[in-house]
Length: 358
Image: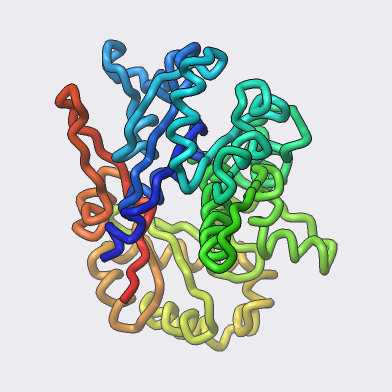
């Protein structure tokens, strides 16, 4: 049912790169028709050319482009041309939603601002994503936003350099924020018949997604420091160890009971009553000495043996997989969308809609 949920919706996507197109793909996955209008002057969405060194330079589309452009109908138009602009307008007259990511002032120049488009389609929902807000013309990519909103400062090893997240996380999170707003706008239109403008900035998204790290600072004045994957509030949580056969694993012992069960898994029952580790607060204060003990214990146990022990005692550990290992798992393969393009190319990407509804 879900894959046809929005079969009657028409989306016109004027956005490029990741955040806006991710919203368009969300609706495409749920059955909507998505017309992706790309800038003919720049030879289309800039991500068409964002190719890995090993990618065929003669291919029209990059692997990056494939990630958020599944099942879209692409039109290359020059919106500064009156005939091309009119072609876009004809689609927008019929559209339910327009998705854009113009810099401040640019939408007006090409006749694609909300104020201009609602005159020809009063029930239109106009979804806009920008770097710093619609009134700020400054350009900004994901890496800049990660840096400015504290993400890069917090990320990395204690004695190493700050590190950017390996995906454009601000774009992905902004896309989620935007589609939540669009879904509310669809509900409002159903109730009132009125269209809406929904806007999101990458900067606001970065700040709003800081969750407990922001709260630690705002409430307690604790400035987050680089701790690798370690959790600032729980120990041992996020700590990485190696098994006897050199499999990297990460711990997620979030409760006292899980810590005690971990001690049993590792045959370290004495740690449960060790006065340095009996509470989470003590384990945080004595994390280095605790991890030294755990490290030696993990190195005595092969991964398969450890996994069976942990599963039997409901201790949360996970292997640190690379993507080859991940996509060898059936549950990950179930999240892959495949598409045959007009030139016969087979393209793949992961789903953006993973929820189930009954």
